[in-house]
Image 1 (cartoon, rainbow, N blue to C red):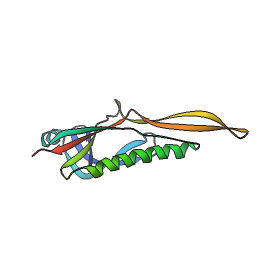
Image 2: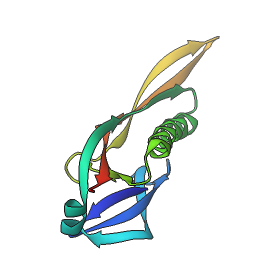
Image 3: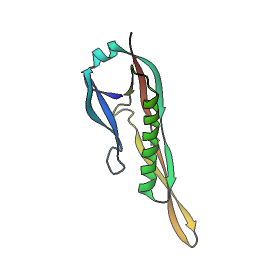
Length: 136
């Protein structure tokens, strides 16, 4: 399960990565878990932390960005699959402070007799996820 802090509560979320959105790396709230943040911090302890980033490149801007977001989603899904029964992933990146954004650089390449753009996508800064275990 993935959770995120919203003000004074911690709620379950699911990834919602969309290359056409203003905030490409997003999470939608779900109703699987909702509790006060203080109660969550009393019930769970942090045991690990991951900083996820991704990169992709390609000739078509939109396809390269979608590949970038798909790569990040696969890494999150792999981390979630490794979790034990009493563990959760918490999104620790905070909007307005260190929230990840997609970044694009392009260069002109000569293909045959034509100039073509080639795109390089990255996620900066890294998406920080903490692994929390329920206290005994």
